[in-house]
Length: 77
Length: 343
Image 1: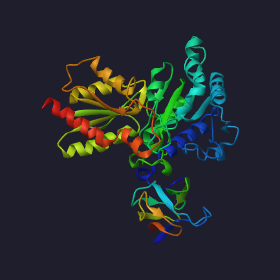
Image 2: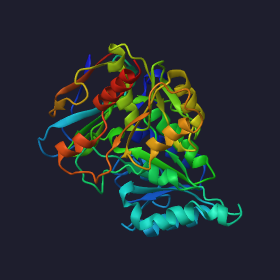
Image 3: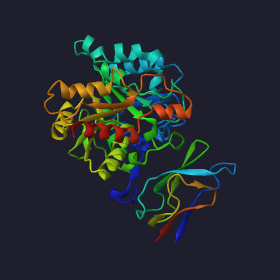
Image 4: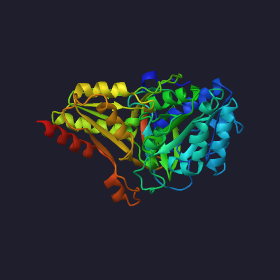
């Protein structure tokens, strides 16, 4: 099981972000590098890509407020 | 290429628009994009993301804040054989550049006896709901649909957004592509979840001028466009719980208007309600109602109704703006009254 976490390197502050959209269904089969979600911090959107191949389970749903390091989804190989 | 299974890939309208533009730019070197904050930022509504990196600054251009100049330039380029996509960031800003739009873009083909084509896409954002004031929140659908010489489209979801953009770019006529900010998938504008749908990666067209029956029903026809379609679908779920079966028609195009689909639906249900976030008077709602009543009043079981924006400037204050906007609750109430009127 590999976690997709809110990345720490996209913005400088410790501001929280919001999950604005999941671009795959819960339970979708994804590949490493696939665009799976967008998150927003201070009106700027950031792309979230899958780190590995597998079946994606959404942990943080749309409109969830998340911090750097929080688990957004899990991928089962 | 993505390994996400075809039936599982979803896009926002913003991504659907950008994907259509990128595909047409790859296929046709005459296609280019310009507008304020289009290139480096990728559009304030995300609809040009990734284009500068792939196509460079000769085909993806940031313009000065002078709509008169760059929309005029777009008309010139289109008349000279290019296929420009030009963004008017807020439809509310049409005032300064309307001569280029409705006297030049819309009429050059007619004035030249068909010798000049103007294959231009004017894409522009519409709608409010996020407290941006009366000069950043209008829809103005009726204003553009009223004037001859331009096609007008308004997608409600990412599938239609991509297919209508592809069709608009390939069309030899000027097309005004009006996209609602609350459907773009940009978090800060609020995002309507129903607009994020499965979208094929390959290019396809959604025919301009064809409405879609997005929910079938037998008691009342609810006609709308863009965000209003989502109000209609939510209202239909609540109405179903009350035993009222609503059919929902998504216009998708205002010009040409698919009068046949509207009429056929109302002939089936006998009742018509039109939702529009544009101003109530002299607009889309009146046109849709006239489409039915000009042809027959015998099919109606109740007087047609509209849920539209009142004829007032859009307030900045959140509670005042929300009070004035159409929503599912207003639609449910209006339909209940219509059903009561005939029982």
